[in-house]
Length: 95
Image (tube, rainbow, N blue to C red; front, side, top):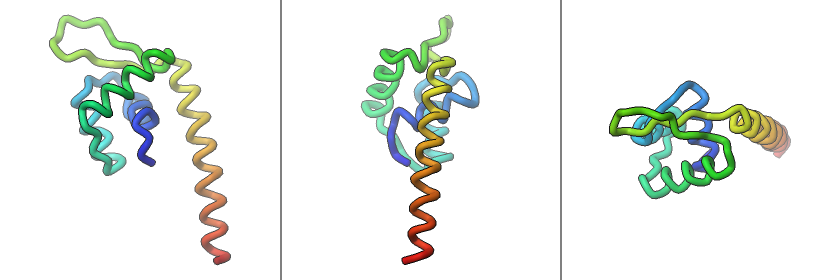
């Protein structure tokens, strides 16, 4: 899985994180290294869709939080991905 938006949502499902923490979490759990442009492009798209929001803080780094709509979207996408993986694994066994 390498869709930056889904990776960001998957990272934020465990709690609020700022950009660098999101990048490091994704690197650890997915083995994907997102560059800053890719990461912040995904963050902008997710905010525009209402799937994440910035958390108000006095800190220099701005943390983000997944919204209920973002959680629902992630669940839908993971269910669809699970179907694809299941089908591909069945077909691999028969090949």
